[in-house]
Image 1 (cartoon, rainbow, N blue to C red):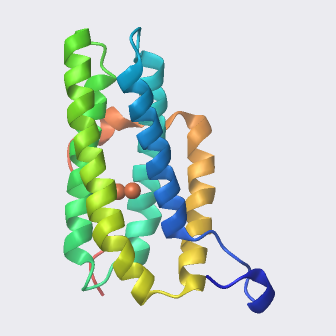
Image 2 (cartoon, rainbow, N blue to C red):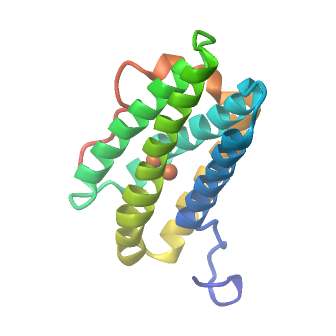
Amino acid sequence: MATAKNTKSKPGTDVLALLTAQHEEVDTLFEKLEKMTGDKKSTIIELADKLGAHATIEEKVFYPGVMSKETNEMLQESVEEHLEIKRLLADLLSDKLSAEQVDAKLSVLEENVSHHAHEEEEGKLFPLLRESMSDDELGALGSECLAMFEALMPQHPSQNIPNETDRAAPLPSVA
Ligand SMILES: [Fe+2]
Ligand SMILES: [Fe+2]
């Protein structure tokens, strides 16, 4: 990546590095939840806040910003995977589950998130974008994503998740 010294434009936050770091934070929360024995509710809310804000910045900024003929199919699949993840999170936030059901749903959620974040995004989409986009473009998108994430987090984004379970987030059509 270009450094501030040899580029005139403002150094941005590399969007692929930002999103990958957020995936790792989510992995850490899943590990914590697996080891927990008592009430998991507050950690589930923390996880849902992070995943909710992460999904929103991807749906509103990142995916529209990288939409092309090449990525369209992957991105359509991505918003469907987000929908499945939000439905599981909405169940987990509902207070209607037994402890066994919470653990079962957390396990399915972890599998879904891991497949989506590590196999689909980090494994297929991100390498393609690293090849096809410039450092400046990735930096500008990252700065926009980070600003939106930081604005969303204090508003407890988990509270919006139950309202986002009807259909997948809309994406712009390919130009
Ligand atoms: Fe995603
Ligand atoms: Fe992601």
